Length: 148
Image 1 (cartoon, rainbow, N blue to C red):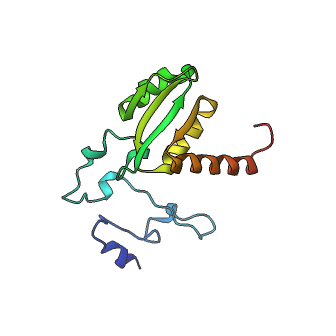
Image 2: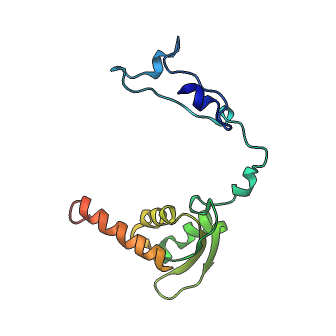
């Protein structure tokens, strides 16, 4: 099995966690082997340019699926503009706050980010995102204690 994985085109090196001196990579019960990965462990494909991804937010890695519209409260609008403004556009909104428009390729990543902003952010569209947002809120309500 290891030889098959080692032969894959983008695998740099692969060593058995059971090789001499690799005992620290095995759990005390002998059932779990640990591995690490680092940039120098992998060969970059010649046709891949990482600079194309350097100025993207996590939710923008991949082909763009649409543009999200997020209402950001005035209380944290400055922070979103400072840290995430380069990933979209911030417009003046109504009394509820400002509007952050950002392209996305990963709905799950964007919904997760918005949920992390708590009561200070609300997804307004598109429907794909608002439906996913509502679904995740329902799941959270099922697993979190009441009142949180």
